[in-house]
Amino acid sequence: MSHKLSKLGDISVEQFLSEYWQQKPLLIRQALPGFETPISPDEMAGLSLEEEIESRIVLESHQDKSWQLLKGPFEETLYQELPDRNWTLLLQALDLYIPELKDLRERFQFLPDWRLDDVMASFAVDGGSVGPHYDHYDVFLLQGYGKRHWQVGQSCNEDSAQLAGTPLNILQEFQCLESHVLEPGDILYLPPKVAHWGIAQGDCITYSVGFRAPSQAQLIEEHFQSLAESFSEFQRYQDPSIKTRAHSHELLGEDIKRVQDILLERLKSSPEEIAQWFGRMLSETKYCNEAGLTETPSELPEYLIKASETRCLFFRKQDGSAELFVNGEQLHCPVQVAIDICEQDTLICQDVIEQFEKYESGLSFIQQLISLAAYYEDQDDY
Image 1 (tube, one colour):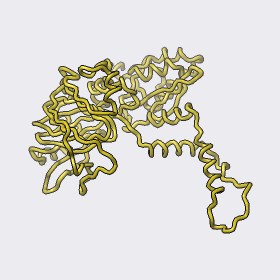
Image 2: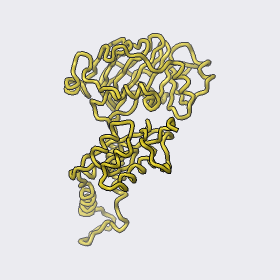
Image 3: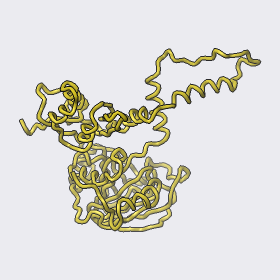
Image 4: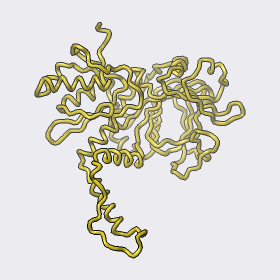
């Protein structure tokens, strides 16, 4: 595992978090000196042909149409038909498939791991761009190969007008406030909703380390859904103190008050209850995990390997134990077991079992991890 960054250029991580994180952009020259792209343009094109890779191509102008979006997987012949300029290939979640990009992601674990989303790679030919736009989340843009000219613009909001006639979120107006040309090893940090526009100067590859930022609507919707699943059908609206009213069709304040009381009472979740729901939500995987096993092996292996798609985090309980969240499920275990699972890629089965009070509990725990496709046997040993 790579060491997380302790400095961002000339400033410490602590200074970055206090002065820049979610506040203002920061250009970091040679944040990763000597960085070399772990994947070539040809390899990216090859991956875009695969079903399991989320891929897109953005064409600024093609066949008399502006800002077209093509979604993969693609056919190899497509690349022979593309113009020489002004297109970009985007591959999502490459940290699941490229070990060096997993290491890159881990460099940013000075921030909460659950906030990290994935590492996206962008290959662009000369003039290639996805247009002036903004994101709803923080992003670190690392130049991996070639050069890209970045313009940083205004802060946007929900009233910022976007171009019609394209599925891309292209801003109608862009005000350039900063201008930088990034070379390999340079990083540009952008807070949410800051407009930016990157244009390739010759062929180039840029890596985007993006962060998760659930909308408040999503949080409320999913929390309400989680609460609703815990209710019994016998828990119903009641009005034992109802009185006669002049108009039977009128909705009175007392009716609203009863519903309000129900909602307020049911929303009184403890921090631990919120942690359990939030942990399950955050550990849900976006991409199919085909590396793990769905059946428990006949003999417990000496060790297991964490599947690259596995998401995990834990919550420390007041009784000294932990709730571990793995791939959307919740497991109870000792705190040290939770830490080891979240921070290590290899799981020594006997060491895990010994930390449980009963052998059967530890064995059952490991079997659950396997059934969740979170871990798999190292087939090279056979």
